[in-house]
Amino acid sequence: MSKRNKVGSAGRFRAGYGRKVREKVWKVEKIQKQKQLCRCCGKPKAKRLSKGLWECKACNKKFTSHAYHT
Ligand SMILES: [Zn+2]
View 1: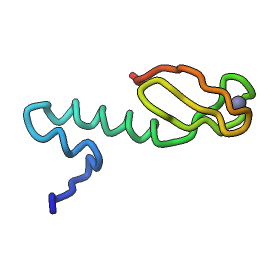
View 2: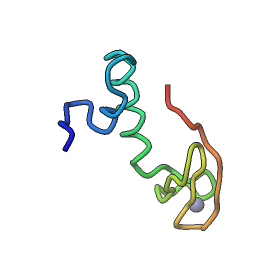
View 3: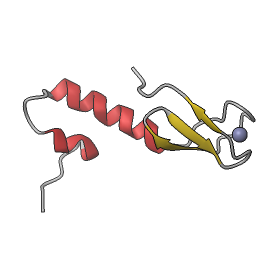
View 4: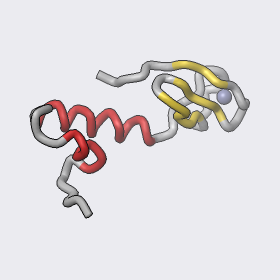
């Protein structure tokens, strides 16, 4: 079992990437796990399928969005 630190899921990046980068990744992944507003119907029902690809559970449309939040 790997020890989890406060950067959570970004912990897999280990050292070498630097603390600031890992914190940035952690923030991005936190956003990506949340549901996004659909571009088609505006409801917060969009689920992330992969990098920049989202699927809305309300209108069943797939759309691309920003892969990364900076
Ligand atoms: Zn929608």
